[in-house]
Image (cartoon, rainbow, N blue to C red; front, side, top):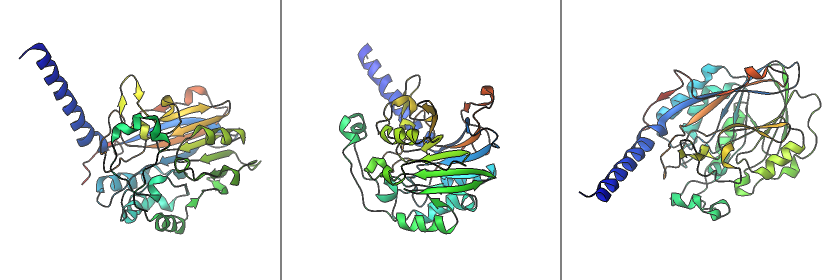
Length: 320
């Protein structure tokens, strides 16, 4: 075999191995990240916020359901769900099993495109094209109203185009959210304006972290915005990061915490799922994040973002 043939064979074997790892191992390597963010008013007690996003649930994803339900053991003060919970018309019971014990804790949510519409087969390469940011391919409608009714009946608050004033473990929190900008459903004008002067945290929610929306939250004095949608790039290149964000957000902010302007902090969850038609993740394991929110005057050495943390939350299990 000549040198070119050996090179092509080795390249093909490497690619097949990477694909096998991305599909068979990493996509179910459930991971808890932790980050400490100085976003609270001076004198506020720290808050523990669990950020979950992009479950993309189908009915038989049992290991995902068990892992998400076990996050209740973290005892968060507030749970924030930034959308894309569904990937199947019969997935509402599965999503509720996953969030079950967390629904007994204070929680807020907004929806994303894959709460409203099911996935469809797509060429993954289309995400590398500029038109992917504007051309939408919708599947069949999903039962988002059933999911909303179940979550609100359990006490969670729908923040979509709403101002909410919450007492979270003794900390006054102002929350407002927009509908999914990825579908052009956002109406920031419905929540524009000042926030509560008594709030020790001003929290904004959006599924897709579009800069035009982040700029509006920043202009209104919000402290923190939580988002999902990007899947962290879903496929990342070590040393380079995300290839795409599937929105107008720049690649370095596709996963984790970052600053947006002088005051606002942004946290983008890489999420817990994949499309059933692209069941792979590489260098970007499915994740939830436990955020410890601290006063802005906190010691900078106490603020950080860590990679995955230990058992029982960094566990892998094949989805069946």
